[in-house]
Length: 508
Image 1: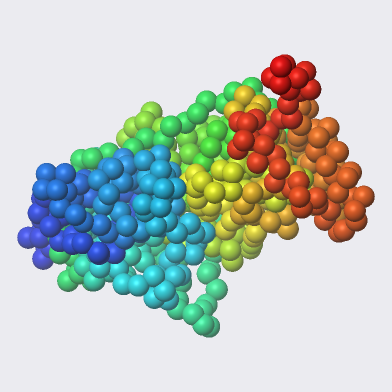
Image 2 (image 1 turned 180 degrees about the horizontal axis):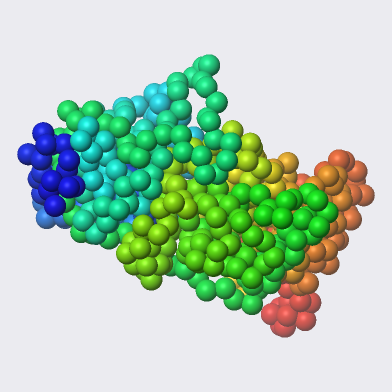
């Protein structure tokens, strides 16, 4: 095991326990760790750090940078107040609560931006990188596991590196990855990807062996993704999208195999991909940031010929299946750094079809992906913005209502804008689909209200739009009412207007 997992003979003497390795972490450090959507994340050393804090009562906090969300480690670190600053993405409820209380400084970033900011020095020095690996090559190169994320830039810029070799990941994972880092700016050369399957880098993360101060063997597994089964409304939305794509093919705006597909993590995106198994499309390609269960189901169905991503996000069942049979998928996929999987240059060149989830949309097509009621962070913008602005076709999905109808997801004006109306082509709810391409603001408003809003909110939205239009303007609004629905919800717990008889009974 030692010889095959650490092929650089000079590094074999640097094997330590997680408890020994965590001692290199000191208060105030900035640490870059592997991990993206709970896959391939550094686990053993950070969990040993939590044990140290718990047992000693030591007051210690770090700046923690990653690719995206970590597994259970995010919650453990948050519970013990170990994180002072976190970026660029998270999805843990414990950490989220601390962020919204102001206890953790959170920088929500486009996922393609983090590596550039680190490369340019804007985020300061990386004191230590902790990277999960399959093995270490003869030259000291680090072969990642189930994600790449921001690991290459962390390794390049860190003063010291700890490698966690995960023995549960088969050595056959070597060869899955394609590690390419752009040159420094200005006068950077183009990224030489013109097809989804192009390999342009190495199968490992280059690393100066002298940087590696410790190697930890671990058997801690990735936290499985919680795949939410499609319900009737989710399946209806997926159906609208598949019908729309068929329509685009019939009119010659898309080829028979569509264009490379990107989908964010979520039940609707997974349902759309699953629906492709019986749709009349063949030889599909995926260019995305995360491969969910449905991608491997499409591999098995012979529908997808190739997929490029930077991470897996798989259920426990699918993790076991893919891990045990990785050799049969290796020639069909690539895992890249997230600055490449999400790079605007490549997304634009390939003409990607991007499908992502919204919290709310407004009548002109602006999308809020991150903030509940405009103030409380959910997870973060993730990669949706990287794809939305640059894709050949951008689709956002959301159910028309939430909280048993007390919240409308279609509102006069969103409380937080992550994606402007200029970046949104198509919106979908279980009520219908609205193709916004080429429409004026007033035309978009009519299409969104008529096709997407829930019936219990549709008349009030139309009334708002008509009264705003009477005042004139290119994008009509009633400023005194634009956020009144959210204010009504804050005061009453319901965006719907109270029925007159209920108001009367309450008054009595």
